[in-house]
Image (cartoon, rainbow, N blue to C red; front, side, top):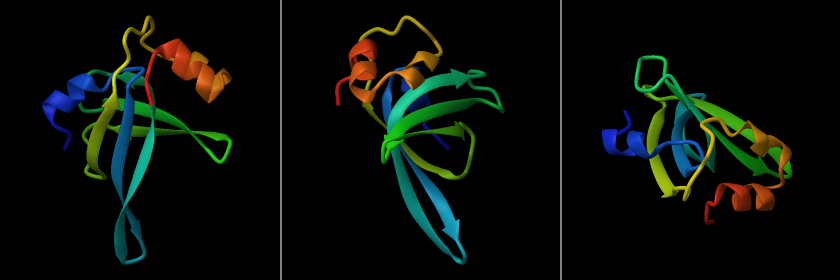
Length: 108
């Protein structure tokens, strides 16, 4: 379960690192995924989600996480944007990593 103060900071344009539990056979490990939050849907209700986008090996990867999921171990906020003018950042999909950081205003 994600803490309430971190939930308030998860908004579009924020750079986050999500630690999730992955079960491989009988073993369980923690995998980290770092990227920019593209959007957050449905507020704080039961079906609320947020989507994180990153570039892995020159391929754009997006992962959608339910907020109330027991799979999420921890969410770290790396940086928050100065000012984002849109709630859904779909335009980031067409931009390079460098141009998207400049346009959103996120450091790192």
